[in-house]
Length: 299
Image 1 (cartoon, one colour):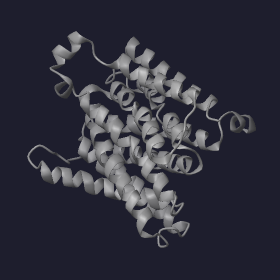
Image 2 (cartoon, rainbow, N blue to C red):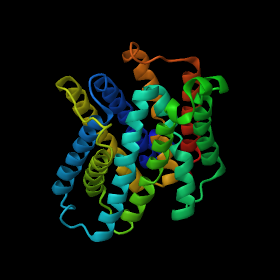
Image 3 (tube, one colour):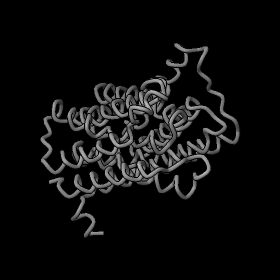
């Protein structure tokens, strides 16, 4: 364990653990969405994570001691990540499949590092930038060819826009979390507020599109969603603490190596509903290689 700390550091290890548990959560949600809807999945998963944050923040006494500005930034996290990001991510899973959607949405680090440099003044080194570009290269490989784009009818009809919006939406929450931590270092309050606001954002989206949005979730789907929500809560605990301890430029890329775990889970457990291609494997290997570079050159 000491050797792992020396190689990666605690914040980086927590980010990797977050990616693993998030990958399991996404696979469980994918199973549930055979009988449920993306909106129902998002509400259940966010609700589980918010409940975990409330219990943990009550346990450590931080919830009742919160002040305005941390709560404001946590609410902004909720609008962008658990709200817009989760909803668009789940729609992408339904439209183009788990492996492809997750890999495309894992372009988040390129936006996150840019935002961290502009807003937080972080200065990632060449190794971290190279690793981040390797992660994004996986996304380029997964992009459809010209012929595929014609058959899909464009980016919007082909549904690639959903994981791309998801990637942008998830790039901002670590920045907002850092701004909140400058006032109070309360990650569990952040979870409670962010995921509660995320559900309010999803419900507001439903209210704006009442004719096309379904929240129905059957009993079978609900079981999968609750299991996915429990894993999402654990993943959030790892990630919120990783961002608290480390820099956005290192923890965010490592938290997005989810395609590795999703590929393995899809191959062994989702073979009947997920098709794995050589292109998926090549893209995943690039994402993992990028994560390794970020780890090695984090200092």
